[in-house]
Image 1 (cartoon, rainbow, N blue to C red):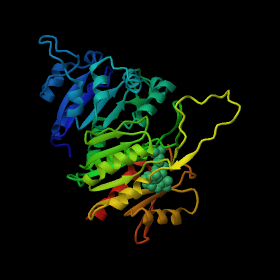
Image 2: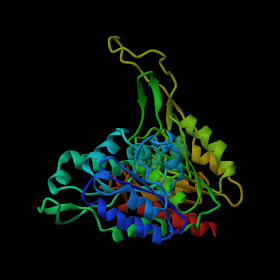
Image 3: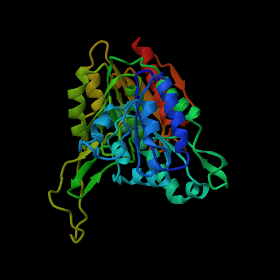
Image 4: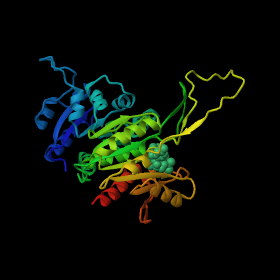
Length: 400
Ligand code: PMT
C-alpha cells in the first residue's frame, strides 16, 4: 500500500519519541520513502543519527544546514509528500499547528504540506484533557487533518489515563487504510464545487449561507486520494484542501463560481456540484457603506444568479458525468428529482438542513442518492469523509 509513497515523519519532544523509531522502521519496511523532520526538543529524546540511519536520509531540524548554509525548503518538502505523519505530537506543537505559529521546521513544513496529515498526540492526561489542547485538536480536525487518538494507559508521569501515543503498528494501519482505497480514479479529471457564495450588499456586508465547505472538500479529497486530478472551485471557507492533486480555485460570488466552473468543465470527466450557491445577487450594490443614520430603511433589490449546475448540464458532452446536490427542507425526493431532470444531472445527492447531524457545518451527513431512473439509495448518518466515499463509489460505478 505504501510502496513508493513519500512520507514526512514529524517528531516532537516527548518521551514517546522512542516509538517513532519503530514507526519509521515500519514505514520503510512497507516500502515508503521517509523524510524525518524533528523539532529541536525532539532531538533531546532521540538522536538524528538513529533516525537518519533507518531512513537513509539526513534528518531535517533547522531551516539552514549549519556546515553548508544551504536552505531546507519546507515548500518543496510539503509538495514532495504524499502524507505527513506527526508522531508524537506534543501539546505545544499541536497548539502551534492550530494557530499557524511557524517557528520551527516541522510546523513550517506542516503549513506548506498539501498532502493528508496524520497527527498522533502524546502527552500527560491532564495536558491532553485541557480545554486548550482539545480546542486546538478540534481546530486541526476542522482543517481536515486526521487525528489518531491517543490510547489510555500508564504515562511517563506514572499516572494512568488518556495520552499514550497510539502504537506504531496502529499508526501505520491508519495511514495504510487511508491509501487502501486504491487508485481507481487515476487518469480522471474531476471538478468539485464547495462552500458558500457571497453576494455583496455594500463594501462591508454580504448575503451568504452556512456552508462550511466540509462536504465538498471531503469529496475533493476522496477523488484526489483515489488518483484523480481535482479542480476544487471553492467559496470562502476556513478549511484547507489537503492533497497535492487538488488545485483550488477560490471564488466569492455565484457569478465568479459560474465563470470558473464553465471554464474548467470542458476539460473534466466529471463534476460534483456541492456548493451552496446563492440563488440571488444584489442588484443595487452600494459602493459606499450603507449608513444606519438614514431615515429610510434601505431596500435591497435582488436579481437571479446563473444556475451553474444547469449551465454545465446544458454543455455536458457524451461521457461526462454531472452530479448535483439538493438541500431540501420539505418534499425532499420530489424536489430533488425535479432538479435532477431540470439540470440534466446524472444523479443527485439529497440532504436536509433540518436533520440533526446532517447538512451544513456538521462533520456528518445523511444522504439519499437518486438517479435518473428514479432508483434511490438511502445511507445512514456518517462522517462526511465516508459520505464522500459513497458518492464517489456511485459515480465510479456509473462511469464504468
Ligand atoms: O459545506 P457544508 O457545511 O459541509 O454543507 C454541505 C452542504 C449542505 C452545503 C451540501 O451537502 C449541499 O447540500 N450542497 C448543495 C446546497 C444547495 O445549494 O442545494 P440546492 O438544492 O439549492 O441546489 C441544487 C444544486 O444546484 C446543487 O448542486 C447546487 O450546487 C446547484 N446550484 C444551485 C444554485 C445555483 N445558482 N447554481 C447551482 O449550481
